Image (cartoon, rainbow, N blue to C red):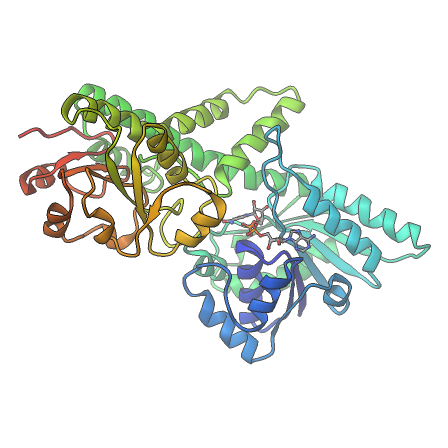
Amino acid sequence: MRITIIGTGYVGLVTGTCFAHMGNQVCCIDIDQEKINALSRGTLPIHEPGLQELLDNNLEEGRLTFTTSLPEGIDTSEFIFIAVGTPMGEDGSADLKHVLAVAEEIGQAIKGYKIVVTKSTVPVGTAEKVRIIIQKAIDARGLEIEFDVASNPEFLKEGKAVSDFLNPDRIVIGTDSEKAAQRLQLMYDPFCRTDQSRILLMDIPSAEMTKYAANAMLATRISFMNEIAALCEATGADVDQVRIGIGSDDRIGRRFLFPGVGYGGSCFPKDVQSLIRTAHRKGVSLRVLSAVEEVNRAQKELLVSKMRVYYDAHENGLAGKTIALWGLSFKPETDDVRESPAAVIIQDLLKADVAVRAYDPVAESAFQRQYDLPIEYSPDMYQCLDGAHGLVLVTEWHHFRRPNFDRILQALVRPIIFDGRNQYNPAQMRSRGFIYHSIGRPYIVE
Ligand SMILES: NC(=O)c1ccc[n+]([C@@H]2O[C@H](COP(=O)([O-])OP(=O)(O)OC[C@H]3O[C@@H](n4cnc5c(N)ncnc54)[C@H](O)[C@@H]3O)[C@@H](O)[C@H]2O)c1
């Protein structure tokens, strides 16, 4: 099958590469010439495990091409996926300018039947807007060209995007066209050979809403657990034990119950906001989600508040200290730093007159590009600690899980760790000689 993907970011690039991996002929389009040049040479602009191998292989086999020309890119394809960004607008709603601009371009360039699919996360009604824009552009050209629209939101997780795309939990297809439904089902068949029931056909508004509702539910679990963690701390319970206790209930499940420094990334914050804005416009009040967002905002400030209390009481305050920080990306296995809790933590530390030295295995340059902050970057996780008055762990990269604790003790001026991801055992940390603070677990003094 011939497929075009417009927007070659985290979603578009993984989608295009995985479709090519299944034997399809795929053309990826982006307005970023540098990105397209790099990809044509086989250079990935993002960090995503497993993607390089697939890119190399499909470029070599000639199934994957890259261009900045939309008319050229859509000419021979039957499917056109729109996978451009939908960032948060000024009022919190999804900014659709890229999606709608692409729809206009499609309308100008389309010559024959196409199935135009919105893969970007977009509010209910967007596929309809896309349909109207394309139709108007065709009408203005005085032509009659048939096309269908469909909504096919993406559920991949950065860091596991390739395996998620190749083995999806479900594929949501929203369309009002029998033909588009059949063709899309056929295209996705190879991804669910063991269980075709994972392809869920529905109407377009429900498909669009499913994506937001899924992200909102996941964000809710995180904020809920962060509040339970605060209550655990106040009452002497251990959130880790509580998490296991509630997670063994089938109705709840074990995943997504980890408290931490708040959710970030390019999806949850903007999608929760967007849903709240949509509800507001429709006169519906989403009180739970407003609280989810509020809790998350406060959670990003929690670690520095705890540090302030500790350093004021025991170390003559935070001002003038140097703090080492591990982890800049919003989660492990990605270089995505959008809405990263690390940015809030660093800004709060800088405001408290703290010098920050940061280490991240892959996200340093993305972080430097996105945030212009006067901090030092370290190329090595242990070097980062040299002469620091404490360590803050923000992102749970795997190699932070079992570090060389003796090296940490040697490097830090004061053996203080604020762990925003509950990576270590509090009692063991105490016996190793650390002053160790985490989230929702008892602080062990002796
Ligand atoms: N990143 C994720 O984990 C994830 C997961 C599921 C869904 N989504 C959704 O998918 C969409 C894309 O997200 P992303 O993270 O891949 O974004 P991204 O910012 O990484 O990539 C978007 C790409 O679109 C390109 N673009 C913008 N305007 C264009 C135009 N007119 N023509 C061609 N290309 C254009 C940009 O240059 C960029 O390369 C968003 O709606 C997002 O909410 C993201």
